[in-house]
Amino acid sequence: MRCPAKVHRLRLRRRNRRRHRIGKTEAEVTRKVQELEKARDSGKIDKPGKVPTLKQWMRVYLDEIAPLNVSQSTLVSTYRPKVEHWIIPRLGAHRLDRLRPEHLDAFYGWLNKQDLRPNTILQIHRILSRAIKLAVRREIVARNVCGLIDAPTGEEVEIEPLSEDEARDILDVAKDRRNGTRWSVALALGLRQCEALGLRWKYVDLKRGQLRIFWQIKHQRYRHGCADPHACGAALHRYPCPADCPKAKRTSGRRHTCVKQRCPASCNRHGGKCPKFCEPGCTKHAPSCPQRVGGWTFVKPKGKSRRVVPLPPPLIPLLKLHREAQEAERAAAGERWQDRDLVWCERDGSPIDSRQDWEEWKELLRLAEVEKDARVHDARHTAATLLLEQGIDMRVVQVILGHSQLTTTKRYTHVTENLAGDAMARMGRALWNE
Image (cartoon, rainbow, N blue to C red; front, side, top):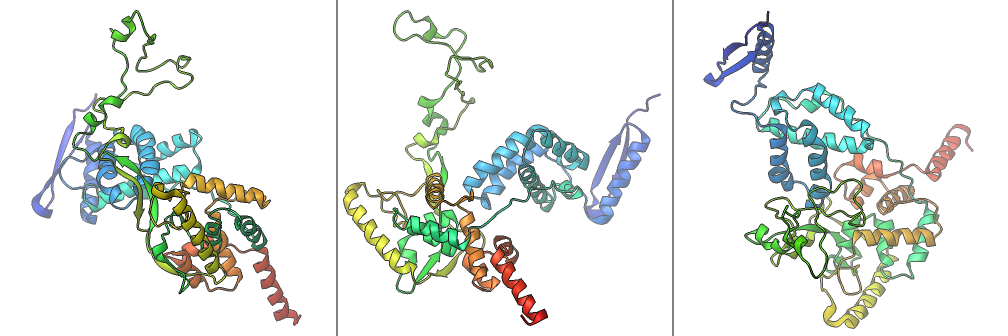
């Protein structure tokens, strides 16, 4: 015989607040009360009131909390897609206080079956854990369930920095190309891509031979600056044709083919690019807003990356020649010149897009006949490793790269054959006096 639902009420002496637990059997109610008493005794009891679902909290986290500490580009390209596409559809219906380790185990098992890369799954876990950690701080829930399971294992990215000879070959090719000094600075000082592309002349002191790395340049996603974003983009809204579409009734002029909300998988009417329709109350189309905000913006470097870096002496005359060449381009551009004071820019003074910068790097690798498929960021690893090979103290390398922790710098430095060979040579002299 099925037992009726039982209610066990427990009055907590702390602040004289009550908690209630309901179960289908007496044993279930007893178990829940014991868990509640254990939480009370450890000081980790949930805040009274209705606890939000994970979906509700993740939306609060994305809209109100994360933008305070995460760059707009990272929020748009990484956080939102992973939350909206993976976390909310699978876990969003759970209340925060009822999310259990077995839910996460099943979630990560399902993600593995979606052929996601291990590092992507680890990113999803970190975003989820960070959001719930903040809920714990605000006493919305008593514990972070992500801390009760083992985090997914990420894959170790194999990074092989360029050798000294390969770096020289790249610089030999780059010296005759426009903005060639951009790569001299990358390989010598290890600037991040956004730091190099956002470097301005007012932060370059060629007399003292110093760079002040105080800013980065980012392309922020455009946002409406007007009072009514929906009305602002009215001319660009796309909606499916109604059942009695008036355009389909035309007897002259251009023929109209009605489109529905969802085209079938076999649709071939749109050249493989079926239209995407706007949601009701759409507030997109910000790039067309006359009062839009966003675009190219100078932002402060992350963490403790603001630093003053000395220039290698051979690089100073190269930068002087580069500045003279840029002044000639500025005079040729005339009124078309966009004066942002950038050290490396397009022929009209506008910022260099990161994708275009990447393509230039790949072209240099090809022309220099470097076989390694190095990333732009690998120039930073190369600078760190070359500094280490020159016998530079690790703490000095940390300052040059702008790392807040020495452990991060150690991940950027790599033990090359030269360093290992020199170490064994010293060991030979120590043991055999040879």
